[in-house]
Each structure stands twice: as C-alpha cells, then as structure tokens.
Image (cartoon, rainbow, N blue to C red; front, top):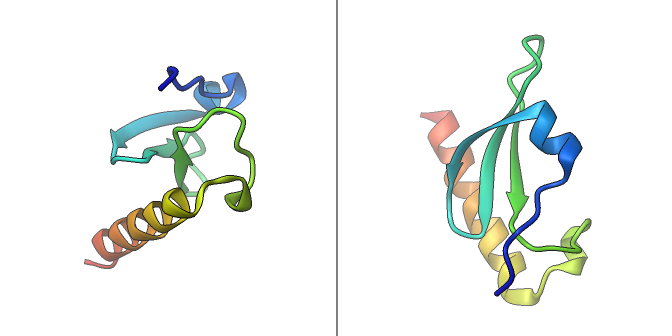
Length: 72
C-alpha cells in the first residue's frame, strides 16, 4: 500500500494525537474550539462514499471509539 500523503493545509492546521488504524486522530490547532478530526489514511479520498465498504465500516467503528472516549 502506498504511503499516505496528508494534505499540507491539514498538516499545518492540526496536530497528530494518535494513529488509530484506518484514521489519524488529529486536533485542530484552534484554541477557540477543541475539534478532533478523523482523517482516513487513504490517498485520493475526500468523501466517505469514496472509501471502500470495509473502510466505511472501520471509519464508523473508529468514530464510535473516539466518541465513547470523549463521553467518558
């Protein structure tokens, strides 16, 4: 699998919290809002429907994982 290339703007405007599996969990660098972003590590993907069905399931799983951690 080819290496994942993170968009330069996202790299500049966010901090890597942790790689989860499919996604990188990133924190937007904006002190006004504590936004977490899940970035699927797939080149050429800009929408959820661009992901394979398996990757869509993994994204859903990882979203629930992060949401559960935030709720706690």
